[in-house]
Length: 566
Ligand code: C2O
Image 1: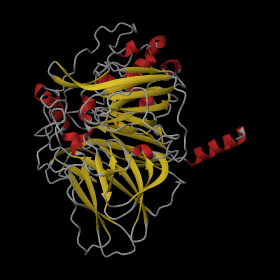
Image 2: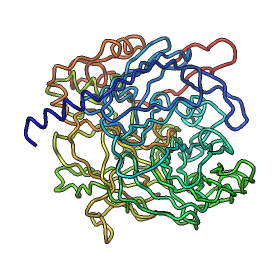
Image 3: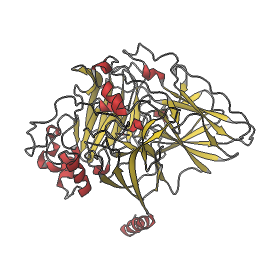
Image 4: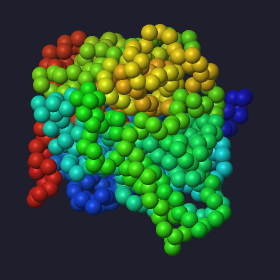
């Protein structure tokens, strides 16, 4: 492209872009999605939280106003790369300070990649309380045709508040469960039970399936309908068809999948949408003790063609052991981006659960993530020449990578459970991920892997006692978490921090927005220096070296809001 044409196309995209400007009050509201009323976290007095929709190229500006009274908060835009805006990524203690009650905080980022995403709290293990919603970046020219769009969320739901669950889990009684988080009260579909979705005959629907679950993965099926996958985690893929009987499609916490279904001509019948949580993930004591036999892992909804016709009974799945799955390694990105090579820097992560002073934690290469006293991004921009020294970041499992490198990360899962790994700031190629019990990666891929154009996504499910290999190009300077998306595991230290091109971050004349500094001052948390908040970069005196306290104090309500406890 000539530079004139390039300039012209840049200008035309600037002209077409809009600003999506939102003001969100974050408050406790009461909801009963499964019939049990409890306090949940809503936005502008509503729960479920609203869908956020922007067009490709739009500027998204969301001001949050924390009116929770008793908890801090923050929002992460899951799957959005935040190119050049790592400090808008929303990870508390990493890219910003937690936003204390009474504070406002503005996120401002560019919707630079079309696709299906979601947003959620990334503070205090809070999103299972309901603080999440779909985030859709519309493509003016999608590579497939459809008539209408439907959003389908598959999640789990606890009757207890997250802060209570985490403080119990991070206590000696939680350790008895061998790192297994407590099972939830059950599954939800579109934040409800027995939901109906009205469809018209002879139409193509683009269904954006989102899994904002906090613990097990899910698997779903549209009864009798063929479904064609066209997108995974914001990557368009070559259409892959699964027929509507017997072949379940798996989705891990954090993942999204865009599928097309064509409705029938005949409107005399209705059809079930079956969803089940992966019961294999709920076994405790090294995978030996199953959840109670009467534990219901299923939730059902219906595609309704005809209001007066009956809603067919759903099947009951207990074990996914004999179900068939389409392997997500076999999706091919539509752009056929070739396997990234050669590798400049290989990182091997051995991961497992561990007991630290009676508390159930997770570790990566023998270290559990301990929060820094300064958000890691702020350390990267305030430690000058030392910003590429992992030591300055403390116990956040820092992985420093250089600009432009091709990074390969091997994750060895020595644990007896499955874990969904998510990386901020990037989509990665998934090279290989064998079945359970494959042990550690020995340098050899399975026959046929990696594919020439591996699937690219931001979250992938790692099998129990097995390994996975991913690659990405370090082309997005910033500080990005790489973590297990089971929320209880994130809180128990199953987190690494990619410090990407820190020398570049430290050299720009970047200034932290004033409201971001105010959030730190109010919380309070330091916003410069190393992980201990010290100016001398290698003086870590005072840094966190112990597992933090998860006693967040009284829950909300009853009565007047309990005091805010950090
Ligand atoms: Cu969807 Cu680090 O999160």
